[in-house]
Length: 451
Image (cartoon, rainbow, N blue to C red; front, side, top):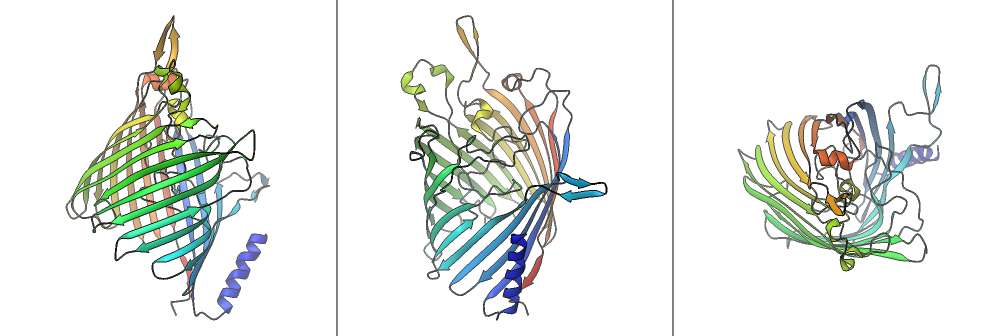
């Protein structure tokens, strides 16, 4: 109730005051129906498909002044029918509060090239491999942080410096449909998240960026001890932005990880990704191939203490999962999906823009572990799972109905290997598929600049 009163007060005060600055009110309604049969992991043949509808609702209050801007974004996330307070005629409500603050920040403008943003904010860098807004999640993801940005478009240089410190350790309750916890760890979220980002645009077709992140985890045994995970790497983008033209395009990432993990174990891990494609027909048709490799813990080196005393499993931190690892069934979005054996994927993608409003794409992924994963003992011999894990196919169709309404549909089909089913404890495997249809409506309620 306090949040509702706050929103009403802000709206009334803003409308009643002089409109020398710009004030805007807009919203987002996102409703997604899903049929799940093998989402997050393969299922047994006798498993029935699940059907549910999730909804995200956001109200955004934006204020823009000559020297600063602000955003207050209030969010409600729910699954249809999940109310636990009901009566004989319908849904009455919940015993817990769905309402939350998604974004709440102030952005101070020093000059045309630099600004300082303080508060809860979205973050998206490059292809979002490590810092992402995680938009597939109905809850999305924002960061409580202070971020300084220098962006000189005339020279092509950009520099970002961000820092945060979360003063309270708490359990995580993520938006995992299978009922699990979030990706950071069972009960130990990131306590401090800091990074430096440097980007150089060389022309309209190519840019290179450097990203260095240090993320701290609080020790379970001693609250004064922080285990710091360090990630450093390079991103290269050639003709792959929204302004890209016909012809060759490509994206590559190379990252190293060191420091200590959430348990205080020394880390030595790496990530390498590459996509190469060709665009033609006035940017209507794209053909591309990709390779992605995440390092893992090699079970075949069990007798090498110098190796086993180090964690070689790559941590994706706050990076996007759903668009990449691998196929939209989300089988491989966390390291334990492959029993910490890492990930290797070879994929192909075809994308076609049938019109300004219609986009269709088809993607195939062939997934394996990047290292050996222990299966069982055969007498005195160690047996490992076959590295080949699965193939997935994803078909997506997007229709932009108008400037405020977008309709997105997708169907995914997964073909796990026998060893991947065995890895997940499944004997009699069934078919694995995921279908969704999603409508996003983004109305603009008020804009003081339009009189």
